[in-house]
Image: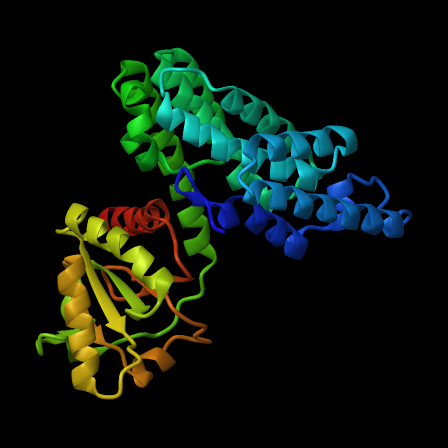
Length: 360
């Protein structure tokens, strides 16, 4: 039976994490071995034992006995020091912390306190896999939420500072988080987040210039009609920075980037043109156009959309997949290419570097 707890299911909260680490966790690392080769067999056996214990605990959790399951996994971690068990404990504590914060936001939850302390311990351990850092550090976000709800905004800000120092970069989510709304109203928070944004902006600009400096350009052009049957060409857009996005409405990472392109176009309207070349999995051009038009209307896309073609795609050396994005300067030269989804901040940094270059 699937039990819903604080917007997470029992599967996604507990058994999911056991399954995940079974697939991706190095057994020797999970045991904290200094010499992985020497005691590999022992580590594998001990790790198998840990997985068996976690499976038993999952059954208890699935039966609705959350307190007993929490005590069992806590005891397992305390006795063994196993990082897999530590990760499982951190996720169980976070689930219950989120539940308590929503139910009694003005009261400090012991699950929050224990979870944040455990997170700091795990994150400080060099053997704790970095792939699991994002999930674990959310315990510190819960700590900040709990402090803010209880009225201690200074403590909440301290936790948020720590969270960002550990690699959390979703600043917009921090500002809009309803459980941090009282913190977000303070002058201290607003001053701090402005400073952080500037630091991130400068770091991203440095990164963007480094990427552009080592990029090898290539000839590129297009001349066709858009989905509104209006002629478009790279030549007609010269004088502006141009972003050409090879994408598809069927592609999840492509769709994820759309809000960033919309925001960039709104913010840099006079300096930027964006062309989305869509490669649709439909039989006819009419069906492809309809798919793109419907998607653009639903998502309020504010830039040029057209159907991509094989000729244009072949102009991109070693084209690897979607999304692939070209950043083209005002003179029509390809200055940067990315494959896969980038953050808004990264794309803005590349755009600003190109705008600055054209102004100098």
